[in-house]
Structures are given as structure tokens and as C-alpha cells.
Image (cartoon, rainbow, N blue to C red):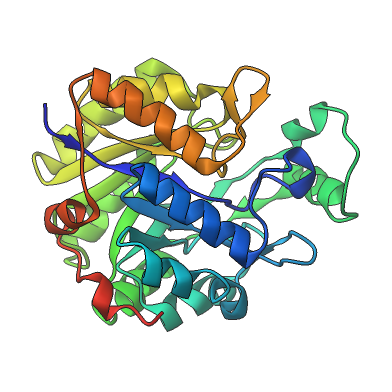
Length: 308
């Protein structure tokens, strides 16, 4: 079978510090876990930042600079910066660091959507920071905004002007049609790296038949001009990405998506999840791609052209 890309999403903006002591918060912790994940076989590192004092998701360039330069110096992994940040951030906030750093890759959510995290309040816990519980409670009235105008701005300023390629995050079927729209407008070119996202309340559910249907429609819309990858939230992470790997797709792991390594067992690092999925995909006969193979496959500009 063909080579497989393992992406690792190190911290994200969904989980809060009280949910796991292993979630990297500070710049040095994010850098260390990123280096370990890359060594374990992750060829793409998907990056968010956090305020090291409070653990809040952050879009500040100073917080990205707490780990991006070190990762750029010490690993050849592709650095993929989020343009999603957190649903409570403005577009200007979300774009500040990516525009300054001009990464090889950036994530791009392909639509406006409800982004409900409040079901995570179902588990009793002692909250480390006073912002965590109110933040989760407030997501019953939270919309992540990425209008067609927003998407076009990101594609223009970060893609066309700075040479970034995109991980197109599709949380629902409509997002595939939005991606086709921008391809038809000539704002993007193949190959398209499409990330199917399952299990966020507001997006599509983590059902195997949703994966097969998304793949069927992507084939219809993009033919052979795309690669697909899968991420799934929480306990659905490993089952759905294993299914994706068996279908010829690529996979994403990381503490952004799931805090566990097995049922009821917290993952002690991002690298632990990388090791687990690498073993699975290699048993399926897939060969893990190196960062340089990913660069060639996706047509990336090269690590030497980022501002880190």
C-alpha cells in the first residue's frame, strides 16, 4: 500500500489544563512533546499556542515563538499552524501568528459552525483555573465563524502571498462543497490535503458510514486531486483513524483530539499516541512517510522559507 502521513496535534484549544496533567501548556513543554512526536514518526506537527500562565488558548505571536523556533531548529517535521485558534477569537487574532511566521502549512476550517464543548462538563473534576468551567459552559451558545469572505482572506494572505499550503478541515459534508467552490475560483490548487473531522458536537458524528460517505463525495468532487486524512475526537480517535488507514487514507493523533491512549487511561504524551498508531498502520502494510516525502507529495515550499 502507499505511504501514510501521521499528523500530531499537540495541544489544541478544546481541552483545558484540568483534564490532563500531560497536556502541554508552556512553550518548552509543547516543544519537547513536538520533538518526541516527530521522533516517533509524526511528519506533520499541528500547532496551537497557550498562555503559559493560565493555560488558556492563545493566538499571541509571543506564545507561538515559545516553541516554533525550537521545533524549526531541532526537527525536520512540517510545522502546520492553526488558523482556527479558538472559536472565541477574532479572525485577526487567529491570523496574527501564521501571517508573521509564514509556515509551510496551515489548517483551514471550511465553514462557520456550532462548536459545542459543554458535554465535557459531565465528568466531575477539580478545576485548576477559574476560566475553565465558564468557558466550557458558554459553548452552548458558541459559533466558530469562518465565512466565505474569511476563507478567501486566509487563502489570499497566507496562501497566495506567503506560500502556505493548507490542511482543509471538513467537519461536515457541506465543507467539501465549499472547498470545491474555492478550487473553482482558482484560489487553491491540487493536491488538496483534506482532513475529515469527526466527533465535535456541531459537526458530523463519529460514525463509520459518515467516513465512507465523505470519501465517496470527495471522490466525486476532486477525483484523484486530493489526499484525505482523518481525525476523531475522544474515544473514537483510534477506531476511526485505523479505518482510514485501512482505506488508504492518512491519520491524525494528538492530545488536541483525545487525551487517552486506551479506555479510561490518559496518554502520558503525544508521542505515545504516535507510537500506537504507527504500529497499527505498519501492521496494515503502510509505510510511514518522512517529512521530506510529505513536502514532495503536497508541494510544500520548504522549511527554509518559514520565518521562525
